[in-house]
Length: 83
View 1 (tube, rainbow, N blue to C red):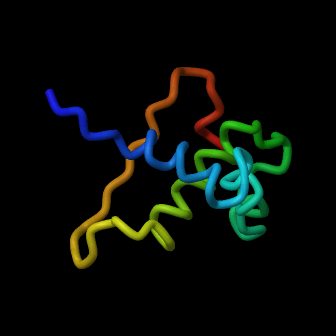
View 2 (cartoon, rainbow, N blue to C red):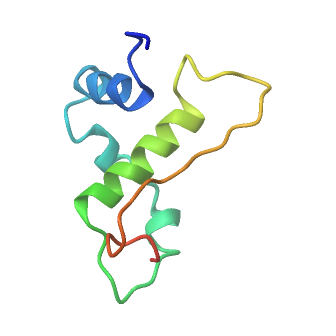
């Protein structure tokens, strides 16, 4: 096994340099929140997940270019995936 840090570890460390531990939560575009079920309020970790995805797709400097990008949200049953 390699000692290379995983992406989530890099993003967690990077948040401190990008504007604080809540950097990803603060950078959710209104178009995402407005397209979700209005009967449910987003939880902090959901804001975090959307923010990390947005940052990775739009700003992450080490993201491979010109290759397909796939993402998997690994979340437990009942954790709020169907908003």
